[in-house]
Image (tube, rainbow, N blue to C red):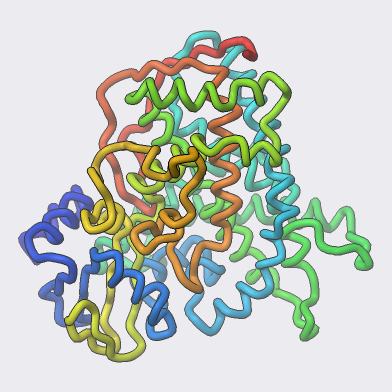
Length: 442
């Protein structure tokens, strides 16, 4: 294990692949405290996340270090605190919220295309552009806030903060945050930038109080509301949830969109088919929420991108009680690592698992295969009771962004094919520079 530390830090995905190839579906690492296991088999992963989910919690180094940024928000809270938070926040992801996303996607996509059009044919970092776009959409959809002016600053703060906490998670002996090392100083500044955005949102919302007889409009309304037990959230509790959704709500979607554009440029026949499906909708002023049913191929592209580049490439759990995983006895207190990166490439579930094949998510009639996206071998948003609360929002956003932009641009890669850099999500190392040309509306 000591010999592998350099590889784990340099290329953790290759390390995970090597462990699975060399040792099989359940690997016990030679770490005495806590006993640590890597799970790659889809059915075994499903037992941890779904079948016996009550026996596993989130008190792991992965989520503890992430909480340095998000606090004890929905993403990092352990079992008891999480249940109450989930109940309170679930209404913000109602079907009506999803319908509003289409309007925000169109506005942000049009704004992005207008900037690119003014620049003419120019080299653009697609990774950065998708981060800004996704940040604008999540700000408007969940908080009613226009983050377009702050997108660059908040995206940079998010990237810096997450990069640092990942390095801390990989280096357990790193100095605590109170020690003023360069990394800790950068982390504190990044968190202060995120906090200032929270303060601005709360101040703006306080300037236009809501009629309490009206139902909550968005997530921010729910956070500010007194619940059924008469409990009002503290400022810090509200702050933790807002930052959780700023970070998780745009980083994951941006990662998926970035890799989608990379894969589409590598497979021009797929790009042509996606454009053909959405061109008429764009010409008619769409796509709208109701157009989703007419975008099965675009949805399949998103599904396949999430299979190959799952934003949550690593899921960790702490066992609360003894369990048996694929014949291996796992004691209470153990750390169990589930890697969607490996599960999504497991040959027991996937034909030609390393190839980009959106068609695997379509049935003979060309419609989305629910049995595959809901199957045990597909967990880009986790599974079970801790399935990502924003899954449907993320899928709707990603599908509509691709449909809105693809018919209106030409992309040409610049430089070598980027390698995958696994941090909190999987991002392209060095960004994704591409030459972008905006075309007239078809």
